[in-house]
Structures are given as structure tokens and as C-alpha cells.
Image 1 (tube, one colour):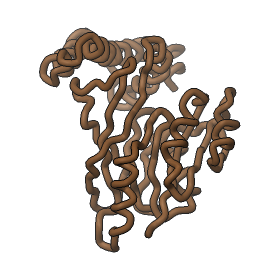
Image 2 (image 1 turned 45 degrees about the vertical axis):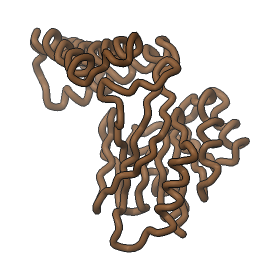
Image 3 (image 1 turned 135 degrees about the vertical axis):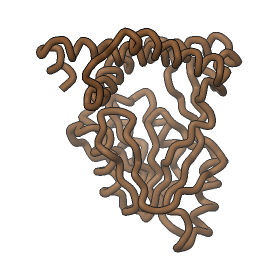
Length: 258
């Protein structure tokens, strides 16, 4: 049966890494690539039985590509530190590996249950939230964009049935901790193709995101959590374009997105 390496990239994930690694005890190898954490992430990862490599942060795509190249197994399962692999998904992957043969898919999308503030948010476009995460080594690589990197696969892609559990923002403060960095990275990427930010970008685009997620994708069915998640999605769009506007109006501000 083909071997599987679970790859986790980390930066200050002491609150998540132990539970993540525990859910991955069934794989052949657990590899943590850490971006010089200043908390106990590395210590806890080693105590949990993972191989740990510490290296400077080159960006999401390059860090994951390094980990995939370093993996000792035939297959790589890419897992975020705040994700868990429940038993049904683990069993589905083991079953797939036991019957996989040359000519089958070289990568697989896995659905993901996103938990916000302690509960699964089922709507607002957040489920099934398929992610390409199980790949045969040597058949895929991430592109190098600042945020929301994509895995480019050379071959066909299948789909699994059972989902990851994604323990994302547990409290509102968690959302804000990521918000500044991710909107800056998104503004930087958008700035490669957009040079002028207009009023409609700041008014219409956030409104469209809110209406799409809250009404069309039925975020309202998740109650207060759904409303908060949809508002954050709208705010993300507004702040991304506001930062891009700020960067394009002055050379000094532009350097902040460089």
C-alpha cells in the first residue's frame, strides 16, 4: 500500500498543533515545516512525534512546496494546523491507498467543515469547500502568490466524500488577528492587475459579497454566526480595496504592500 506523509506548515500554532498531529497518527510520516515560531509549536510538534524542519518564511506556496519535496512518502496529505482528520476521512484515505493503481487520479479534493466560534457554519458558501489536499508526490506544486495559493496538478483530480474539520476562528479576536495580514497580502496581489481604485470598488464590491454570501448562499440560515461571517467577508473585500487605494495614492504607502 502506498505510504502517506502528512505535511503541516506552522507559525505560532501551539494552540492547535497537538490536536492536529493526534488526528494524523495513522499516516506513515508527520512532517512539520515551521516558520521560526516564537511559541512552543516546535517543542509540542516534536513531543507529538513529528519530524520538524525550521526555516524562514518564504511565502505560503514556497513553504508548502519545500515540504512536499522533503516528504519521504509516495503521497502527501496537506493539512493546516487548525484542521483535524476525523476517523471516517482517515479510513477513506487508507481504503483509497489500498486500491490505488497507476492510471488513477493523482490528486484528490477533500471537503471541509468550517467551524466558527464553536459551531459548524454550513452555508454562506462554506460547505463543502473542497480543497485539493491529497496528492501523489511529484505531480503537483503550489504557485507563488501572497495569499490563497493554488495547487497546480499535472494529472486528473478525484473527490473524497468525508470532510476535514477546520477549527478556524474560535473568537472574534481570532478573526481580527488574521485580518490585517491577509488583507495586506490580498491588496498586494490585486495591485498586480489593478492600478486605480474607484468608489464602486469600495461600495459595490463589499455589498455584492455580503448579498451573495448572506442571501444567495443562505448564510442567514446559520443565525448570528452566519451574519458575522458574511459581514467579515464583506469587510475583507472593503479593506483589501481600501489598502490598495492607499498604496496607489502615495509612493510611501505603496512600499507597505511591496
